[in-house]
Length: 322
Image 1 (cartoon, rainbow, N blue to C red):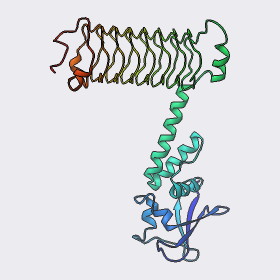
Image 2 (image 1 turned 180 degrees about the horizontal axis):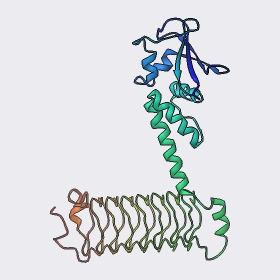
Image 3 (image 1 turned 30 degrees about the horizontal axis):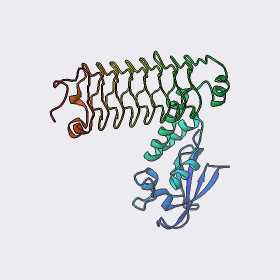
Image 4 (image 1 turned 120 degrees about the vertical axis):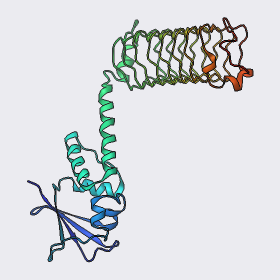
């Protein structure tokens, strides 16, 4: 049975007046607020319309109550939202109830806020990390460490010595590898490191064959002789990274930022560079067969600053007209 929400209004409906809100027919709770609270944050809501002074509302002649036939359980959360705009911390079932009340009162901002919180919780649950940084620290004390198929998404593994560790098949989304030593680490075969941060990490001779690194940050990383063949590198940042002698055959570098990167001697055969930024990149002795540089960003404007010395299979067909 629904509880009657009673708004006890002291005096006229002037914007500067206070109103005492009594929630529940008997044994209910009383709340005190202002007309400004009810009308300011959500001016298009039902509450704002009721107490804006634009409409005549029916009150109890003796007590001045305005009756709204709703469950009053979450009205304090609604008032707090109207006061400070902060979404309360509730469990999922309570959020479902609060959403129904917000929809009734037409509180669109509260609906959006609750939806964002629920979506974030779902994303965090989907990560479902199986280990902690402490667990990883204990494991790497041994030789031949393998995290094959393990979900360690979202962990902070910065500055750790993870050389020769096998991360193949692992879920590594949004992992923080900044300044970590990953020399000869393996991220082969469906390793998912989307959105991970490898800023200034040591990745020499790493294996990323077929790995997903979409949106990863590798600025300043040392990727000398790393194997990134067939890897998904869409939207990655390699600003100032050292990719000399790296294997990038048929890798997807669409929208990648390679500004100032060292690609000397790198093998880019068949790589996709659509909308990639190659401003100031060093392409000395790079292998560029079947690479279309016409689709790369900043080539035409900065062709003089790029070093093409002795590029292999670089022809007029894949270079833009300067």
